[in-house]
Image (cartoon, rainbow, N blue to C red; front, side):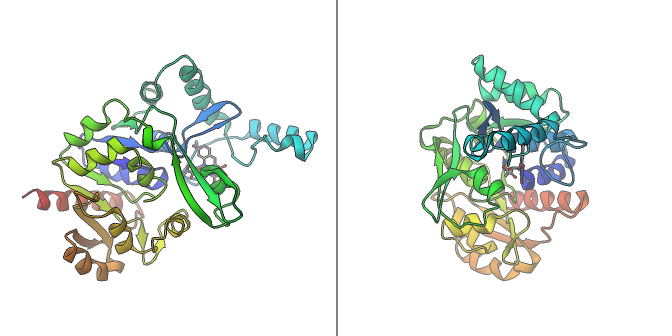
Amino acid sequence: MLAGGIGGARFLLGLRELGHDVTVIGNNGDDITLYGLRVCPDLDTVMYTLGGGSSVERGWGREAESFRVTEELTHYAAAIGADNAADVPTWFGLGDLDLATHLLRTAWLRDGVALSEVTRRLCERWPLGVRLLPATDDPVETHVTLADGRTVHFQEWWVRVHADVPATRIEFTGAATAGPAPGVIEAIVSADVVLLPPSNPVVSVGAILAIPAVAEAVRRTPAPVVGLSPVIGGAPVRGMADACLMAIGVETDAGAVAQHYGRRPTGFLDGWLVDDTDAAAVEPLRKCGIACIARPLLMSDLGATTAMAQAALDLANDLRT
Ligand code: FO1
């Protein structure tokens, strides 16, 4: 499965219930360096969520977290004045427990350890029940150009600006020349099924597919590729996927997202699940050669999420026969 942050992690909780051997290819586009620390939000969200350590309320970071370090940084920023504080990014909340992850990751990366090995080591602490691989060991970051012409890191647009300012361009810096992390291509081409979860199709799954070798592997794997719509009834289930879709000129619509992914082998999909609300999208997609079914797609609890995962695997099985 190709996974973004919160949506991907929650879907994985359901998929894990089915007891299969799962490899998760995590998005690195959201990665950011703050105070010299390398932060990988989507990898950490998957790790903490499956490990039972994530904040249920926030969906990111740790449960029972405190933010004393960030508060102290805020005091420094206030004391030194706006000009000097411009490079003190207190708008991004790094929790005290979460900081331990970033400290270790950064120390290992500085010692020359690859991100995939760093991720493997960090995951030793958490009983994930799946194998988590970063999409790439190379540095990639998603950058967003705003209507006022400034280009900022995705996190600055997402967290600081709440995507309130329209984006005119979303760029996956480093992705075109990034190589896949060890194990990524093998996992995709030897899989029984490749799943695109209800994650953000632009900055989560899209950022992973921006790595050419990963895109190529998804196009040519003998496994069926099945996705689940992150859009229900014309709105993202959570997050601000609509702002990202608007930036690339795609309508916030379950059928439009499938068309954006496209049908293999030029695109990425064999099958697509839409919510029952969007049943009208089924026939037009089938006519385009994408096997589409409508099912309840709200991840309201573990049972509902597990049923979604089973429905996706059932569709994959139908495609295989
Ligand atoms: N999201 C926020 O809305 N505000 C934050 O201060 C914030 C901090 C943060 C720290 C670590 C981490 O792993 C994730 C964090 N997130 C925060 C979530 C993150 O910005 C995004 O939701 C994802 O990158 C999108 O998948």
